[in-house]
Image 1 (tube, helix red, strand yellow):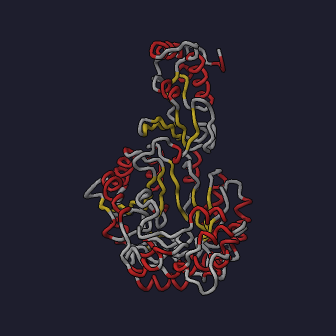
Image 2: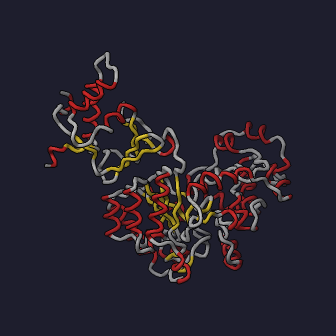
Image 3: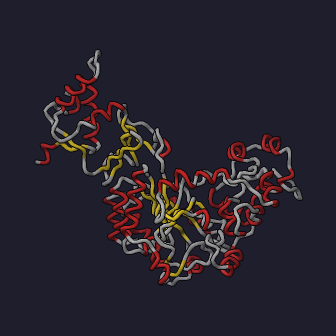
Length: 387
Length: 104
């Protein structure tokens, strides 16, 4: 992709634009409503939720935000939800975005892909692969997850339409016990489909509800999580090999320190369906969101969000553990997950901690009974690793 | 004449792509399928490409563009003519420009 094609014209991509724009990437969440009813989901609301629907941005409001984003140099728009295709104006928004010169990533379950939409994608390609989440490889496993009769057939028809139109796809498996073995079937299927880009990944770390609006839903999601050993085995099934490489350890493992945000927070903000801008799609803490109706996209991304980078941890448990833990690069702990679990940005997320420790023990970086925040010779341990 | 780009031809940017100016860089974003002739997301122009692109107004001929650039830039090696022809041949091959005469 980044290969130069001539002395005059260069095939380029976002990261290779010489002078990066003020805003290179934007998530646009069109709706929280979804035509599936997955228990594990951190965001979904029922398709017929009248309050949610009434609060969603109008088509014109969305277009105005896209205009503002393009003025800031936006190049990549990721359209997500909920299920974005449940909005009747999806095609209009998509075409508007493409005609502004945006590359579009659509995140979808593919159930509402129609012949008309696949024709639109064929004529005006999104330029980035459509990201389809796969909930199972059989009707039984798929609909056990989605809790919608007929959803598997609709998903397969949607995929068929995208394949026939030669639309590039990426697939993510959202499987749970007892169906984790289906990852192997997903990998084989993806290899057979002519337009699937890369190997599928597996959505394993079910986040609690991003908005923390339902303790009962949170309990339900926590019950569905695979135990750490299952997570690791599924990772191998997905990748076909141990997913964490020596190169990764050398580059990314090490204590995180007291800074809460080590992730480039605010560089990929998310407009939610109600016209609020989040620093990232997962971080919904109300005091960190930015009301676009009362301000501007430019102010949010150039003034408000960069301030977050200075945030320091104050939670004693975080300072004792996460700030000193050499597995921070391996651990999926982040402020968004901390918020969804505890309501604060800087508290250890035990589930992520357990998975990271299990991974480290599997790799020989941690001995049984050791606590990773008490390990001082972690550099030597990584140096001793071999592929 | 290289690649069939004669000097009396007049080109303009294709409407099948979107031209973006991002921090002073000209970025061409394909809109319709097949434009660019690569599975590419974006194209950027170097300074030569940008200088020619900015002159593709649907009125100036290839000869006009060459003359303008020769008046504006020093060209001791006589390279401008070849650069313009090469670039337009490439734009044309990738359907990034259209020949105005062919549209009449």
